[in-house]
Amino acid sequence: SQQGEEDPQALSIQEGENATMNCSYKTSINNLQWYRQNSGRGLVHLILIRSNEREKHSGRLRVTLDTSKKSSSLLITASRAADTASYFCATDAIETSGSRLTFGEGTQLTVNP
Amino acid sequence: NAGVTQTPKFQVLKTGQSMTLQCAQDMNHEYMSWYRQDPGMGLRLIHYSVGAGITDQGEVPNGYNVSRSTTEDFPLRLLSAAPSQTSVYFCASSYMDTIWTSGRWNEQFFGPGTRLTVL
Image 1 (cartoon, chains in turn blue, cyan):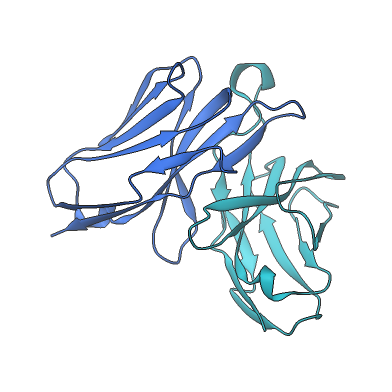
Image 2 (image 1 turned 180 degrees about the horizontal axis):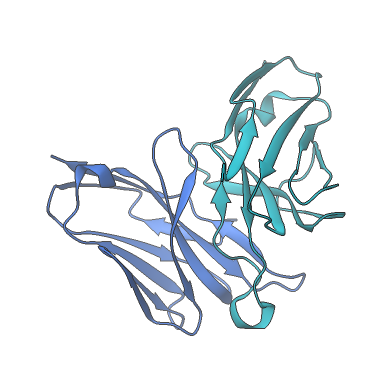
């Protein structure tokens, strides 16, 4: 089963609005990462947040991590049409046999001009 | 730097055929991985390598072989293609970090993908 699950599965907003995507996971993690995938392309890394961090910023992106709730959120402020893409969270989960990087199923974001 | 390159971009195989998907990186990364992406299932790890000569299985390794003879290259071999292997395959690489401070898996650099269809 997937370690990380994104919510919502799809999100449609207007340009200039903020977009919030959530990720929940099941087991303890070393870090959590967010990636963007434009249609037909490879994934691009956005932000890595470690288990001992609570919030991280990168330009218009803000990521939070709540290890007590096993959840993370990605906020994109002042969205643009170019932000239209699928967004995935990936967890570096601590497992008995060593850690694994596990991806969720993604949130499809559409930003309408 | 070219980053992570994959060949071919598209491939059609018949059931039972074998082939090798190529992956190369020029960033001197220790870690390399292969994922497959299917609709509605995100990315699933097939095999990974933490350095030349070292490989390990991921979540869905059956039907695939890998080897890592050099730091740069990490080919994925399909031994006898099946329709269930129709998917988009991504290769990724990353650098090694201090294990006890941030875990083993750091920022992944992905290739553009190979779209494989097995008839």
